[in-house]
Length: 486
Ligand SMILES: [Zn+2]
Image (tube, rainbow, N blue to C red; front, side, top):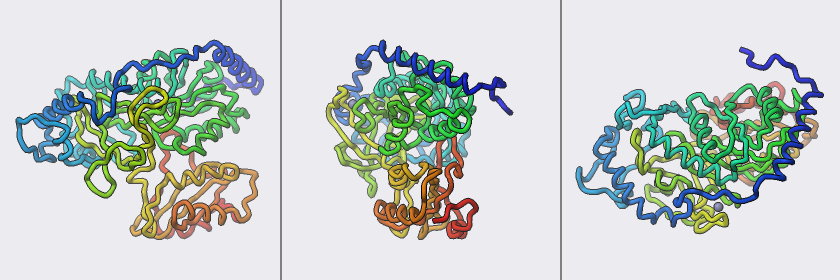
């Protein structure tokens, strides 16, 4: 169905709108108060998350509730006693919960799984995960859980600099995804205005931005490439003509790559912020940068208890700068679907602890990859993030889009990276050069195929860059139609 507006905008209309957008923003910038938004919760300035005395009290109550009511955890945990109070020390002895366990449990006990422990009448909102890592999960939230979610979401948006004067166009899916209505309400909680746009219909989005002059956009990082393409092909406008000053990104990795961030900021003339780290099955948002941009602050205090799991054992690591491990989360006050020691599959590195320049004292981390986005090529651990960093460092010759193809069967010997070359650039000998650069970064040699700009499909949601294909598809790369030769 064509949902585009039948009104056709002339180039003259669009130039006028772009000019008008820029001038109204100048007024906004001149009058906007420069005061720093205060954070409202003591949890953002409280001591080390591991030492807050409240944790033991909340955890004791939560684990007691789980032990008594959760059919799922009756099956998965050998509780030592039915009555004795449970503490942080007890938590450390409990087994981890995986996403796969939850997926299988929801198949067996539809729709919410046997880890759903509340009265059905307590459910106020239902979300579904995007399903980018397998079968989607249904998430049930009570009124108080929505309240906690919005509070943590608002902490994140305030941290990245959203102010009352802002008008944010919200471009995440409202179709059951928590990034839609729930993040929308969290944005509103900062006092900012929100335009509920959702996903799709990009041409109309561009017209809406030109008409309403929002100060910021909230979307996935990969969506910016799609908008750039549409701006160029249909509107013949530079991204800067939209006049956006704040980019709030989340929902998928990307922004933690400095090359990618620099490019977005240069081309769009906005400040690109890593605004939205979270996962719907645990808490929609609980990590965001502050103005210092030295990693994501943990902003789920009082609602979540985070741990750092050692990659090679079941032990946990202290939250000290330089520590690397998998982020593990336990709910502290969940009513409907409480989770204990949930493995997020996100590999994180602690970048800072102690008081930040912004005044918050919660630790900061960066995501370095996914446990499931790591492939072992000829015995070497290769993270997709590292491939992305190399490609985004070559944006004078590459368009930034790529796919990583490996064989479906293990062990993996070959890896082919399809990369979009920038139109108008000379590519003679470049493919080999890029292969050498990747080999130095990854510690293993991979094959590169250059394809024309625009050849790889753009997505409006999470881009899955890793494709597992048959061995013949891997080796037949040079015969593909449209491949650029060197
Ligand atoms: Zn800070």
